[in-house]
Length: 178
Image (cartoon, rainbow, N blue to C red):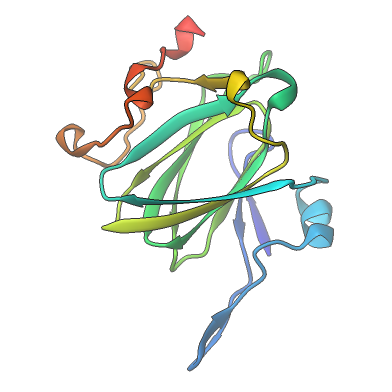
């Protein structure tokens, strides 16, 4: 696997080595030894999968305190614009974000360390999205930043009139209100 550093410390894009032929393809989604050598140690304890349609924006979500989660995210089918926002207190890149197009074809993954808000917009007709977490989900530790925070000014690559949000995601505070 190739690890591509972003401008935000600890946030990396991963390109697995894909073996393809006339039958299809094969690649390792996660190899603990190689991940530890190239990214750092992590112990994943929960895998999640979601299915969404074009225009859905999920996020920007995070878990607080001892329930913070690092995530390894990828797309099985379709395409998303995946976004991570640095919320680490004292970080020189606090409030900065990085976006990466993840697709079922490019097989790219993004590793999002603890202390980040995370979200994605669905660019394809449908997407199947998977993520590994290093901590169990805790409803009472939920946090979120508004997807349309003007200070972040994230271009989700979806026209505003096409954005589909959960009722919950319509009401998150801006970053400065955290």
